[in-house]
Image 1: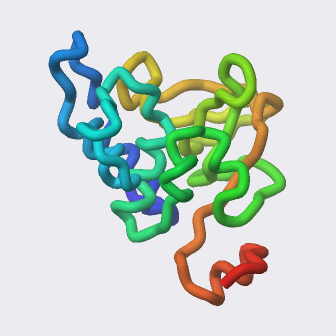
Image 2: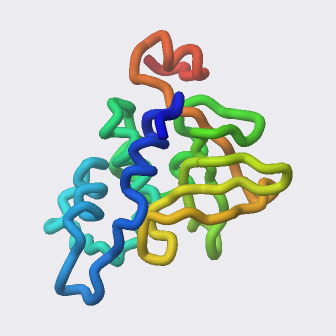
Image 3: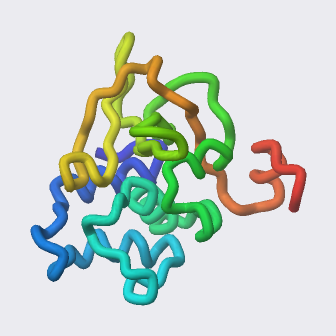
Amino acid sequence: MTTEAPWLDEALSRLGQKELPGRARNNPAIMQCFTDCGHDVDGEGLVDETAWCAAGTGSCLKTCGYPVPPSATNLLARSYLTYGKKLDGPQVGAIMIIPRGKYPHGHVGIVATVGKRTVKLIAGNVGNAWSYQTVDIDEALGWRWPVKATAKDLKDAGSDTL
């Protein structure tokens, strides 16, 4: 499947990648997500059992030539609430941020399909794997659309710092 959102295509290509059981073994593909987002997995003590939905989303973006949020915050799903261009609602390829647990925790993924009341989200760390999940549209904390790191795209997205 090829879409107008290459980061979605990238996420789709990762479906089924799973964490390896036990802290002594790590799936290299999942560990690469942390590295793609600017993290030193050994120095920071990261393992594939570390919450990795935000790193997975960031890795898809980075692989497709898009920027990721700053490394100081990019492992937090809610860091995507200010990323890219704000959307008023769901669309295929949008980044969706939802709550998970108590603030500031959350979950982030990429919209694969849009229904009347739900979306099918593809995300990392769903059942310890790259998986689909169905999410009620009303659960969204925000919808964002990635923009390239060019002055024009950033300005069009509302950035006041270039």
